[in-house]
Image 1 (cartoon, helix red, strand yellow):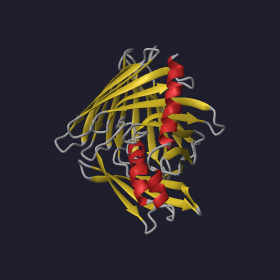
Image 2 (image 1 turned 135 degrees about the vertical axis):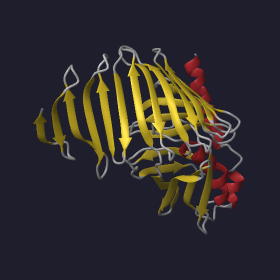
Image 3 (image 1 turned 180 degrees about the horizontal axis):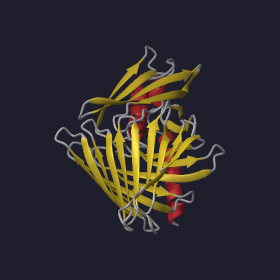
Length: 343
C-alpha cells in the first residue's frame, strides 16, 4: 500500500507541474528562442540544486555547499555560461558551459569544468545532455559516458528535487533517490530506494553556521553504517575529518583524513578492528600507501604516481613477517612490470 501511495504521489506531482501557471509566460515569450524569464523561474533553481552539490569526491560527502552563482545569457535569452563559487574561502568551484541544438531550445549540451583543490589529480570535463519541458523545467539528464539516465520525478515549491529516478538506456528503472531540505536549501536527508521504491539506505547531514558540512551519517537496511565528523580552520578550510565505519566482517574500523592549508589531501590513516592499519601519504605528484599487519609490522608499500590522465602504481614493495624488505617491483604507466629487485 505504501508503495502504491508513493507511486500515485509521483503521478500527481508530475501532472500538477504540467498544469503550472507558467502557460501565460510561455505564450508571451513564444516569439523568442528561449525565455530568459522562464529559465530563471524554472530551470535555474533545479539546476543549482542538483549541480551545486559536491558529487563524487571523498573530501565532502555533502549534498550542498555554501556557494554563490553567476549566470550569463545571450541576446536571445539563452543561458551560455554559469559559474559556481565557494563563499569561504572565495574561489571558483565549477564552470558550466551550455550549447544548443539547432532549432531545439528544449535540449542542450552541458560541459562542466571542475576546479579541484582537494586532491593531487585534476578532473577531466564532464559532458551531459539536458532535456527540458516547454516551461524549461529539467526533465532528465543524460551523461555522455554513463549509460544511467537521471529523471527528475518530483520537485518541491522551490523547484528543488525531492525524488529522482535513475534508469538504464532502455528505460528500465535501476533505483530511486529522495531528498529533504532545511530552510537554507541544504539537504539534510537522502534516501536510496530500489526499483520497487523499497528503502535501502539513508544518509543524514548537519552543517556549520558557515554552511560547511559538519557531520555525515549513513546506514543501510543491513545495518552497515558510516559516521563522519568534519573539522575546519578559522578561515573555513577543511583541516580533517574523522570517520567510524562498520560494513560487516573485517571491514570495521576508523579513518582520519588530514588536509593542507589549501585543502589538498595530506594523509589518510585507516585502522581496522583486527589491528591492521593502512597509511596513505600524499606528496607532490605521488601517493604512498603503507599496509601494516595486525601486529604493527609493515607488510606492503604501494607507490603511485600521477600520469597524463590518472595515477598508476610505480613501485610495489613486499616485506616479510619481520618487517624486512624482500623485493621491489617497478611498473610503467601502462601497468607493465619493467623490473624486479630482490634484497
